[in-house]
Image 1: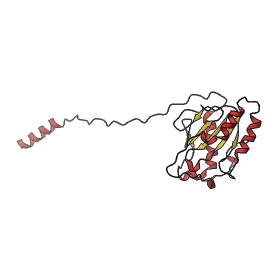
Image 2: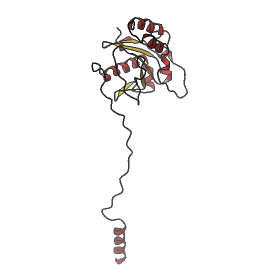
Image 3: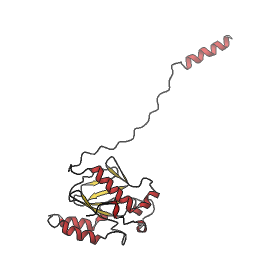
Image 4: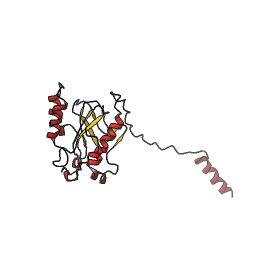
Length: 201
């Protein structure tokens, strides 16, 4: 019996009753900085970006086989796609980058980041209306680059930057980011020309 008491006493010293293990340290995930309000307050950034995402989801429905959510907006930033302003090249929106400014009479290149589904859309904003040119890098699956240039020649007729903007539009694929693992082929056969997904003036 004395031997048993000794064991209990030793155990009490080695492992006190109030002993608690050190809490496990969990690393905090880096948070994305909150966007400042859009410069032009008449435009709701979240609302316009959701329209952009809707347009891409309609043009590339097959993408949801790879990403179930498709294209969407989070923290006022495009997810799985990019937005590059061809009127002001310093203005762009990417999943982890800065917050794109939505501005009247600006011309945007909007496309998925994943190369096989990177169907390019040129979208202009004029008095809260969107003019959408779909899948311009997929012949017969939407609009053509010539359609865009013809429209901009009239839309920008009084703009001092008309020639610069149109030059960027002609080289629209240089204004964007693309990524793939091993598939570089653009799957134009999966591009859909669905005008119901966005407003065309």
